[in-house]
Length: 206
Length: 159
Length: 271
Image (cartoon, rainbow over the protein chains, first blue to last red):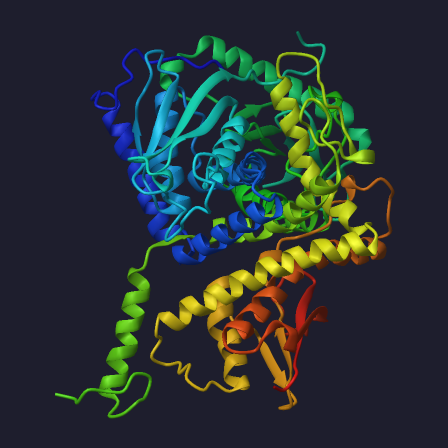
């Protein structure tokens, strides 16, 4: 399905406002009424334990830990996307701007009860950042010495986004660019669209 | 309302599930993931694919998603539901009921998501290598609880 | 006005009820997230535990892909969707890994199960600490006897972690307990997918194989139980916990759930 680009990509464009409000309402309503909930702290401690165990197993090879966290996220993302689409019945986004809104206002809301800000669009309008204040998965976490500068604690989120977006034909690079755990001002995930994947066609059709 | 058959196609143009009731009111009749249906599956997919391509060419993209929903033939109807993740759910039925989109969405969210997506013993991708993409795949969803759930949703609609 | 009440002790009724209500309100106000996500992460621990085991004992090839021996699928695919093709295989590999794990030699198998259990133990003991800290007025943690600890696991821990309580608790009052969960939540939708197998198995063999595939998943709640016991004064080396499958009585089982329940046999050696 061809992806068109709307001419104005700013969130404040009035033409987009009703769509954005609708997405926010969808996210909020689904979270409120259709989701079984668990205390976030249990999830945070579970995830923190997984990260700690990986750090121990890989004996300080943080690149490998980041990779493992990304892979876990990817495996989760390719499944979560179906759960998400079944809950929301959303179609494919016709602009990357819409994608950013769906991700920040619906997906993060429905799954983690968070609504990161979308910011730092680049000039080509094919890259945006999801901005969290504190690291969303790292309550009361202190990085082990030596990890700061190398470990991306919540790298699972990048894998999830990469996997989920790929299933809707968006080939994106997703990575952390800052982390409050490292002493940065905010926790930012950069989502960059490499290309829109063409839908497969039966062999011999083209 | 009579349901004649149910098909699922994935993002690799492969038929990953088919159930056909050859004797309409006989629940136990028919085929399940049968190789006999391979040709029919390819034709069905080809038809969907062509119609969808034409739709995309003539429709205004600004109007949003424009998936094929219903194709009416002389003697039966094809109801289609496409997910943003590239899955097609199809029902072939008679004319008694106008709209099957709720049934199809139910099959997606309560059967496929439950027994395939939330099932760690099942892959969510049935093309294991690149040779199995672009309609060249052959693997189907055989897991027994998925099959049983499809039966229990669609059996009441066989008569 | 009721006098100041001792935490956890019911006195004139009014004080205890309002404390309970206050605890409930505090719990409701705590930040939450989607239980589906939590459960999926718990499940992903199992293929991850195997992947870690393999990657610690296998060399990486030059492209950075981890070779998987007989399960190695194509590592290079012609065409411009190279990255997509590689990723496709990895999500299928997670399922292959479970099959491969079931066939591993004893040492490797046990090593993976140990890893899963130890994650469960760490998480169990931390969750236990967290629940103790939350000061639920209807639970008294001071001088908790063993039976009360087991009840705490069956009701509170299980409810928080798995969304439901243990169905049945049996004991011989001499340090042996059986905790039976007829519908262990994380595995409820699991079913073996025959198309992943290389050979055709009979329906009966498929079901046996399915139970084998799911076995590693049971080490996680085993770890949870041991972790909670550890946090409440029963060291790991004094506790034995084994999970086996339990038949579901027809009347009690949820229609269409996983065919077996889980029986956790816990034995605590006296200190």
